[in-house]
Length: 293
Image (cartoon, rainbow, N blue to C red; front, side, top):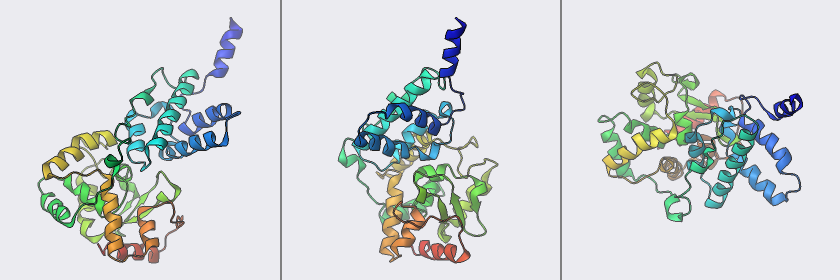
């Protein structure tokens, strides 16, 4: 009996085991004898998890799995691979006592991704942007939409932004975790939305820039269901959060901003401009670019 208990303990992993560690242990066994194509699919799906690689697997909420899918910009086949991978990781985590027996992967909703029209990117028109500026004083959460449009960040990047990573005096903030390496970057704060950043930064003592009336940060699903959707309905608009990013890129392009600067601002993975040190010249160039829209 003691021998049996000893064998079971060898199978157990600590509850602090991270998402990356679960994947590495699972893949070490699962990839044996698998074709290169299968391995590449799982590897691509795992790369979507970059923002939570170092988070304890047991502490990942369904909202986070869903947010990664919603903001991935990937097609239906890739997201199906993603959901399958998360399911496999849950099975492994449950088997090794990292996670209680509750596989949440089955609740990841991919229903919209099978319809090409549902993922079509539609930019905000200039008239709609004007309306948002008019509405911002009626509900402070309209300002969040404007902040997204004039920064080009992913919704997850803004919701996860902590005040400690913002330099109001120098008009930039740091994205410290992103789904791509190029996504880790400094983002300029345009003059026209500087007062909005200043307002949120001084609003309360929440560690996150954006917060609910209860002074706590947002989970994506809570923000989308309780704020984004009602605001869109109120303004009689039909947009997804990612449309703000598409709008920013379109506005920068129309303003004649160099493509390399656009990629650097929005953190496109093809930019090849990721750097650990930014000079004042770099920031000045980015600010000049974003202030053109």
